Image (tube, rainbow over all chains, first blue to last red; front, top):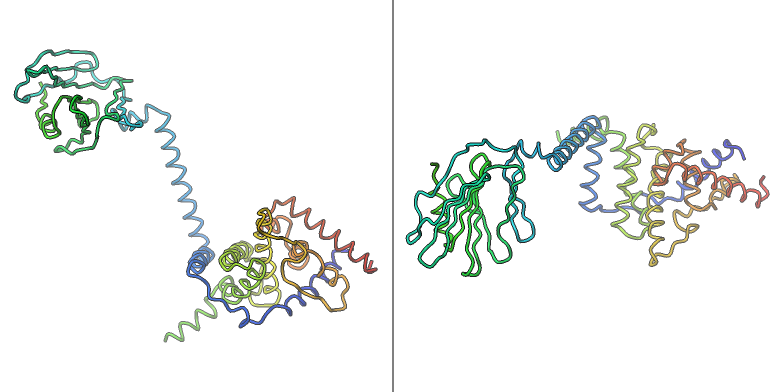
Length: 222
Length: 172
């Protein structure tokens, strides 16, 4: 059978098909707002093809850029280090603090608590390469510990856990994480970074939230 | 003033696509709903058909004419049947490829057209798109939501089936 014969037959069939179609009143239908909305969008696309194509290209470029940044950020510690030093990741019940930047200067600033709660006395000062620790104790032998960690590549700390209730507080220009022990037998803690995210501070002790926050304000540079 | 503005919009300023949309959307819904019996799905298929029409808008010379009317009906029928075929994979739907779609009884003198009317709807639509509207296998594949090779095979099978029907009728 030739294509020409099929073409002729298709034309004849189409005429019969058109004759069999209903008249406009018979197929009157009120379309839903959902359909009207979709069609308005399609009509806009067909009426503004260049603008639509440009917008699509811009959106694609934006997605590619975001994905590329995300991949770089995920897999390159150098990129992460460029925008952050100390950072935290919530890991199940624990908060994981990690340092990804280059090692900080060899003679960094020293810090101390300019005021401590009544009843506590300094027991020991430990100076380590990753930071210093000041240990205080009260008459009952309960410790109050002030740590600070310099940025040394690979330093990692875990805080919190199932036995702690944690939340974030704003203390002047410092954002700190408070870990309050659910059981009075355990000590509570507060963790924060310095302005440049290069030093992590931690105070832990058998203290309430208000006292921990007050202690943050008492941290001074030597 | 309002009437004047409306007159401008309805004549010169309206695009070809808008004219087709305004003129045939209800008819297209009627065709889709006749196959799917579900208003929600039918509206989706009308939208899907308009997406295909928009992609091939440059092939339409005159928006309001019998040929365009037949074309939009064929496209929406393809879309509705595609959804119907998809549902075939689900046991609650009873699918009969030969009976689904527009039922047109051809009573004219062209015997090949008579055999064409007896073809399953998908075969018929593939031949109409190719031989009446001049679409390529690639374009038909897009409208029918199949691969290009599947569309080419479909056209070939449709021609073979038409040929067999014509032989049965003693036309060839």
